[in-house]
Amino acid sequence: MTETEVLGGGRGHQLLPGDRCPDLSLKRADGATWSVRDYQHRTAVVVMYRGYFCSVCRDHIASYAAHRASFAERSLDLIFVSADGPDLASRLAKEAGMPADLFGCEFNALQMREWGVFRSAGGDGRPACYAEPATFVLDLNNIVFWIAQQSLPWGSPRPKDLLTGWDFMSERGRPIRGSA
Image (cartoon, rainbow, N blue to C red; front, side, top):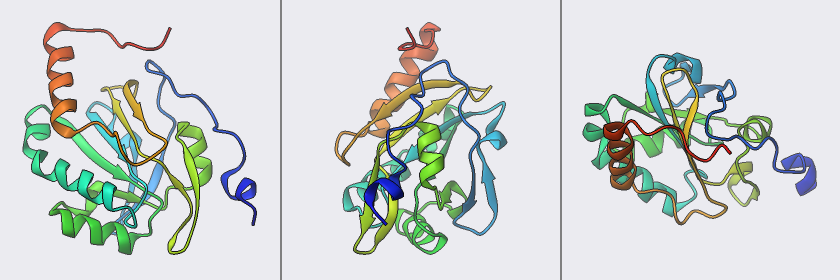
């Protein structure tokens, strides 16, 4: 397959703050099924990462593990998503010291397009197509509140910075930004 056949050509839909997030149902690392709609009436932080092969992503997810209690105190539910299969997602969950039910796997090219994330072609032990890092904060109605996307693994928002930003926006009742 060519890169265009794998990736589907083009970036896909440009998801903006204020948009309702696309539906997303994935197998979880623990074998159950997960859906973004399960988080309706809860605030979710969806962290999309390249996959287990990416050491930068593994370190980034480990940094979320260190702040997991701070997210819970703010009623922010963490979700990690990649194209990895359940075995690698479960391995990463275990290494990061996090429950496997927080890891959605088998995120495919069509779903990546619907979310408008940058995609790369794999090979050499990587999924055929994988998402570049992106973080989405979804409000209680699955409306996109905050988006941070990268085309490379560096530069993802650190958990502490995300928490600081969330506190600032929440305390001041700031509206969604970036949708004009």
